[in-house]
Structures are given as structure tokens and as C-alpha cells.
Length: 385
Image 1: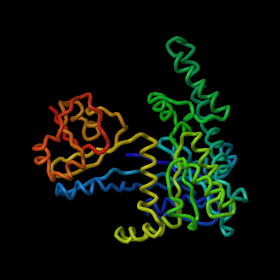
Image 2: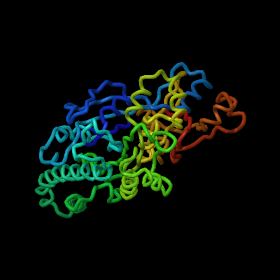
Image 3: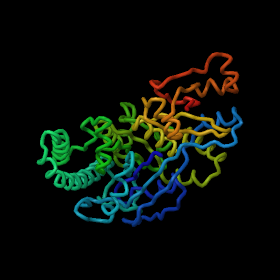
Image 4: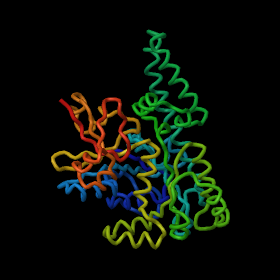
């Protein structure tokens, strides 16, 4: 299950966004430190392909992928030294797959800002600094514990020593580990150590209701047209400082998604059939949750595939490039251990044909071996001993 940790300064709309994403009812208030315990919620990933396959195959059950959100108390400058409450809960997000960094991008005199003004890029820098310092503290403790082992057999542990020393130097210089171009093995090690700055980051710009919709609500790094639009609105407009935030994200290889947490909360209260007209009025075709999850999947390089077993349809997520046997292991370990081959069809081909039988007749069901890398949208039948 994909897990996303939600961080940010106090009063940026984290808990409002969390409520909208999970309908979990986390307390919301216009004063700092409303969240005094980590909020955790699990939500289903909206999936039009899964629903189309369910209708086509007449599946009795259709299980989507799920996302686990962890919302921690707002961090403040000095959190790494124990200021505020957020530092207590950083441990809650050290094990997540990605970090959603919520920044405030709307003016509101009734909601205080810990720095007295709205500046998304500045606020992102404050939080990044605290995460860097928190990671540095954890890594220094890990290095201290490993020094004795390294000295007993220097050649054997040279690679680990050099790697952790390089990471410590980067953090001390103010460089998040994600900027070091870590390979898959290094990312796994960093996650095991609890390095937050090694995780893919998604900036979530909480914009005001004005300017949300056709002119906002997008994902990605922005562009010249977006930057000009922000400049025209000015720092006092409905979306202040987003161009600078996008520039920062582009430099970090991070994603940016604009949401209006307040409007998303209203959307969450509507029945699903009533949401489409609301979204259409805003010029959007997807909710903030759907755009956040899509952006997180892109950042993490995840793809979704589907299985049908015993009339039960199931969606699964795996990293892009996952070999078929490993993908089978997501379903059941026996499938991976006894993997023989896989029968694969594209989801849209299957919907068009109406059944696997009809698809076989047209030659659009492939037989793949152990080297096959599962693709996004594959419908797979794993054959195993």
C-alpha cells in the first residue's frame, strides 16, 4: 500500500486537506498546533479502469489500490531543536513512501500565519531545513553506532562508510538526499534509516477558492504561461508566490499540485454522483485526491495492473519495470515462487472485446515469461505450479 506523509507549517490547511482526503474528521482550527497527535487514514484510489473492467467482466468484487495518509502536527522553525509539537511526530513519517508538503498559497486575515505573511517558497524552505536537521541528527547517531563495526573490518565496510559519510556531509551542507540521485538500493537503505529528505516530495499548494479551477488545480512544474499568470495576480492576489514554488520544485525534481482544501472538504461531503457537476463548474475533471495520488504515482514510478481470480477483480501497484514473477508476489508469495508464465491483456482491449475468450479469438492475449516487465493497465493471469 502506498503511504504518504503530510507535513507543513501550522495553519496551512493540512488537517482540512486530510479531512477532505480521508473523511476522517481530524480537528481543524484557525490557531497553531491544532493537531497534537498524528492523524492516519486509508482511502481507496479512484480508478475508472477498474470500474470499466468490473462492468465488462461482471466481477462480484472489485478491490482498488489504497493509499495511507499520515498527517503530523505542524512543524515550525526550530522544530529540530524541539520547538513546537511537530518534531515529536517525525517518526510517524520516516517509514512512508513519499512526502506531501502542504504550503499555504491563499491570503486570509482571519487565519494567522506563523511568519506573518504568505510566501509558499519561503515556507517550503523552512520545512526543508527542519527535515534536513532532523535527518542529520538521526544519521549521525547511525554513523556513531557503525564506527566500531567499520574499524573492525575496514575493507568490508568501506562502501557503507563512504556512502553514509557522503550523506552526512550533504545534509550538513543543506542538501536533501533526494538531490543526490540515489539508486534503488540506496533509496531502500535511506528508507530503512528513516531519512525523510530522501523521499520523493510532492508540494501541495493550498490555494484560495478564487483562482481555483480552470486557471489552477494543476500538477507538475508549471511553465511560462503559469508563471506569467502568477505574476499578473501579484503577491496579494488569490495565488501568491506559486511561480517561485514551482521553480523550487523543478530544482528538486519534485511535483506540484494545487488544491483548495476548503473546496475539497465541501466536495468530500457530497455523494459521488453530485461531485461531477461541482467539479465541472470549477473547470476540473478530477478531485484533489485523484490528482495528488496520480502525482505521487508518477513521482514514485508506480504502475497499476489488474488480476481476476475466482470472479474477484483486484488492482495492484508496483514500481515500473517490475518483472512478472515479482508482480505475482504482490498477489501471493506462492505465485512468485512457482511462477511459470503469465497471460497478459491490455485493459482497454479487454473492455472492447467484452471477455477474455473474445480477446483470445482476436489474438490480443499474450503469453509472457519471467523477463516480462508488467505495464500500466495490464490485466494479468499468473500461471504457477
